[in-house]
Structures are given as C-alpha cells and as structure tokens.
Image 1 (cartoon, rainbow, N blue to C red):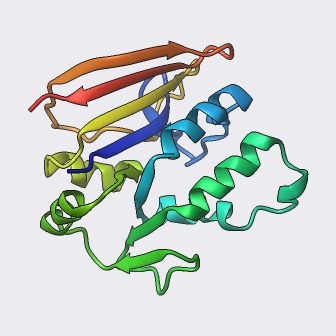
Image 2: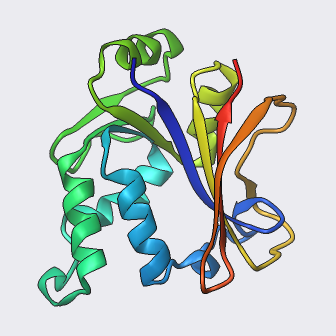
Length: 186
C-alpha cells in the first residue's frame, strides 16, 4: 500500500500563509528547494485543492525555464511527471496534463487509490490535507519551519485534530529553516 504524505512550509507559529494570503516569506532557497525535489521525486500522484492547484500549476510551463537554476528545472520536471487530482466544486476544468478533476473529496476513493498505487501520494494545501487528516488517510507529515512569526493566516493543521506522531527525521538548513518528518502512529 502506498503512503499519503502531507508536506508544508510554515511559519514558526504554524501558518502556511499570512492573514493576507501571502507566503513569500517561505520562498525556498536552493538548498531547501533541492530538498523538496527529493521529497517529491517518488510521488506518483499529488492531491490538490483548487487554491493549491492554482499555485502549483505554474510548474507546468514556468517562464524562461531553460535559463533557471538546475533545482528549479528539476522541480518542474518532477511536477510535470506526476499525476494530479484536483478536488474542487468551482473549478471548471483542469488546465494541465495528467490532471483529473473531482468535484468532492471522497475518503473511500482515496483509500482505494492508496491501496492500488505503486508509488506514494502527496497532498498539498491545508484545506484538503485537513480532510485527509480527519479521515485518517495521512501516513506522514513533513513540515519545513521558517524562522518567521506571521501572527495569523491559514494554519497548516486543522483545529480539533489529535494525532500521535513518531519523529522520523529532522534537518536544519543554512537559511535557518528546520525540517521535521513525522510518521502517524496507528
């Protein structure tokens, strides 16, 4: 059975974006970006909500990609190679290849997808991840904490959720960010 992995960059106070919806404070440098490339490389299918998909579809055709640094070009290739499922009741159509649109999140269908997948799955975006976490579908969490407190915004984890976790790994980056990798205890 494949794992469902939730990865998110957050402020020290646990927000994926600030109160204005901005997340520029979490722009990864080359070291962190390369780290995310390695996290995403084994992913066969990425699950997105509409907003996260709209952010991530940039990677389908980044401007001047040939002139970008190798870690940027590599991430675009990784993103383009993965299948994507977008959960949205408002998006009219998916605008990228290898992308399927689902109108609602169905935990049973995701469980079946995990059971039959040959490669791991990822979920991005706090809203969709909250549904997957509440349904008990997430197996691992990767949090990259940036040395900034933003005071509000969208929290990366839903309120009222209780999970027992096991620390699998940790890493400190030169820019002051810290990676924490947890496995959900059964």
